[in-house]
View (cartoon, rainbow, N blue to C red):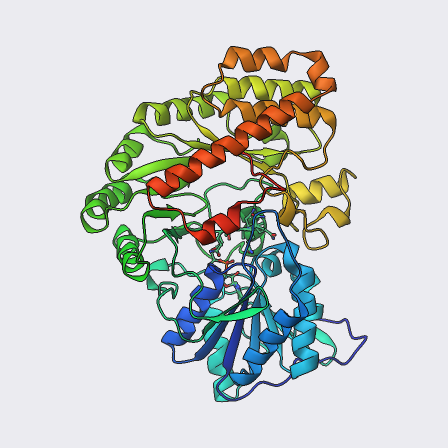
Length: 525
Ligand code: B12
């Protein structure tokens, strides 16, 4: 246990005793995996958990909760006799909302508030002043130990991963060893409808707000083999250094068992999306998965991969087993990837992986990362030229570089004076407004030009020589509005076609439309 002096006040986390009734709040996402993992394991251990989903996540739209919504949250906590409140702070953009809600709960109800989630893990020092206690990192085992101790009336000052206040000092316990056996964790709870409330549009909607979905987001692994400097993984590796195996995957049998659970829990299920940082592409694992998944589940699936692990044979087997598409991170030119993103992957390797995917016959989605402050005008042209070489057809997800606390890219740019602390998520909330690139976001003319031109590449019917010809028009670079307007129009048309396709596949729900359609900010695709 480390204690660090900081004793301007004699603040102490209130003493907790008796079996807790836990109110667990998810900010702006009705799906929140973290919340669902925790409520599931706590319920399994016999604890009462009341889940409150405070507002949903909407693409590039962030609306502060209304007073009525805050009062609804307080009312639920009070009426359900909650004794300890947890708030899941997944993205730094919600830090200020989290602070405000916590204060209301502490002041109006006198309840202790515990924070956890990705932002807390990345920036615990920013969070601890506003919470009575926080949990750094993965919390399934931690929360059970914490609740058992509270129930038995024991002191919680030494629970691993927990930070709390004691006599004006902050107690910062080191993080717990990582859970190696992901198979031993219970599935997230998507099936029970009691003890769940969605607070949205000034209303309380009881029941599980996620039950009507047509796609199930599966997490079959935690961690990653790589360490890109812009990614949360880079921050997590620092937190977990020396704390056990970092990249862990569920067994194929357990993945299939969970998929079967999802089929039961979601009546309209049409697709499974593995949202792991890196889907397991190891031969034995893939062989077993491909043997049992089609027989026992058979629902189309997709996953995220990296050019460094793409293997044509394995992809072929996965395609046969139901792989509908694959998303692959490219990010930028190899020179930029190496210089600032710690991605040691050559352009040739990316092309090789793209050709392998093309031969397999699925339409991939490539992810790229824009808006870095380093790329020169020549880099931007080179990147465009490189993208022209990718075999079509493909979709593009263009992301805008956000600065997560304690990631290397953030620290390096801060040191070089390329960004200021106000640009870092937590203080900043750009990630809620410009995560997927929207062409109308204020940018230098040159970037509007290149982003618009790049957006044209995923419109298969436009010949590459024509797009290249446009890219050389000096006048357009100076006055990018015609190419911007064309890109916006084609983008909107493509999203319309995608919606029709989803309707055909019976995958479109009203909730998905609400989440993704924002006419003021079109996500490029
Ligand atoms: C899947 C995913 C999504 C999905 C689905 C979310 C879902 N079902 O939960 C969708 C597409 C909706 C999504 C959206 C966004 N996401 Co996202 N997402 C992820 C991803 C890939 C996995 C999250 C996850 O489920 N992890 C597994 C669970 C088990 O881990 P966990 O959530 O951290 O929870 C554990 C602990 O943190 C802790 N914990 C969590 N909550 C609590 C609460 C308490 C009280 C306690 C004690 C502990 C605790 O215990 C949990 C169990 O061990 C992560 C990357 C990652 N590796 O985490 C990014 C990530 C969390 N997302 C990120 C971002 C920025 C976003 C968006 C803002 C992007 C955008 N503008 O579109 C939105 C915001 C949505 C929202 N309102 O939160 C960033 C956050 C970075 C940051 N610090 O800000 C991450 C880290 C990715 C990245 N870019 O590096 N996301």
